[in-house]
Length: 469
Image 1 (cartoon, rainbow, N blue to C red):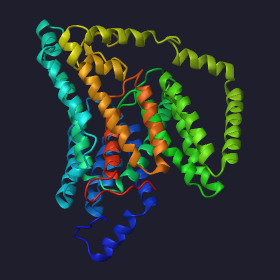
Image 2: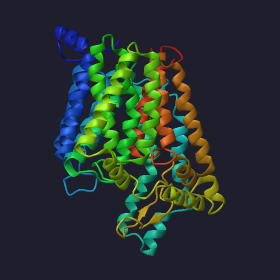
Image 3: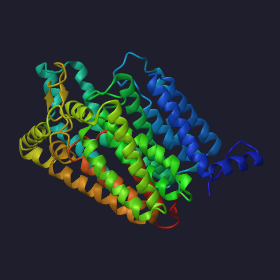
Image 4: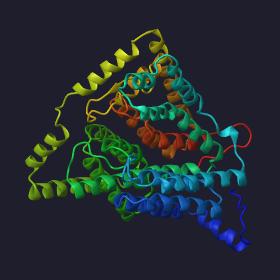
């Protein structure tokens, strides 16, 4: 039971408790936060994440429940529409982060922590430690500054070595404060995240037209595509909750928006793994839904209307030709990826130390594609990125992390476990040909979901009960 250690009278406490237990209120809350995030993102305004940070602080005071911090954290991140290299003052961003951190601190002071929730930290902790070891023998930053390849500002690249440490710390903090009702909120938030990012991609395309490799402020379009696929399975669960045919309307509209977002991402990887994920989800719906015939007929009607509309407006052959020219401008090969993978093997094989412990996150610098600006190489593959940066030992640590992440799923409610597996497997396979692990936009949702799952699994003594309504 959630404790209400507040300054309010009994009647107000009862009112807040009823709201806190209301599943519809959770969804309305997420939608309000994400609406603010979308508006802030679209107008490239700092007021978006500032307002969300203030909301997080107020809701902690009113409801004394950490679950409301989850959509606020996502909303703050994805409301950044100008990127991180900007002339805008950093004051509002710093104040927003302070508000958010203070909200967590206030909650911890009022409720304490639950160390027994920590179950899946060993792999992440090992990766955190391994990230720093290469600095002893392969300090690319120091050598590049000494040779003049980097100026003194290159020292900021050292921050990158703290990446896994920050993700591990985030997992620790949220795992020890999450409650049994948090998993439900996390799953809903990640589901609506796919809707939010789809709308960002759609709005960008409507405003700027189709572009290959565009940026959405906080990240790259293909990074948005990865996260859309990560959240899609949790949005689909609305089809299974439908008791009447009319209950399928809202999930159908959400699905159409996400499918449009996938198309607008202009990402080849998102198209490929999106098709695989959608096929898997469609099969699950046909097996588990009460309205199989309705779903099949509706899908065929939507597909037919879409094709007719495209043919009338643009002509299907023209759209296919244009899509190929924009999205597959470099051809249907993996030549660029294979070149990166070959480079990763060269970096890894430099000497016995790099083979064991890797060459570090800043393993090698390049100017290619960055307007004569030196930057570090990302190898666009979880396997090759881990091998080059943390070596064989890092691959073992990553493997153990995957084992921890998947093994905890056996404790999750059977109604939702299949959707979590589809989500995890899709993005993990996608990560074999693109940047996922180690990237902040991907790691934040992953560690929050891990923390919520760990809280929902049994533990010695008093444990958190499963809740995935």
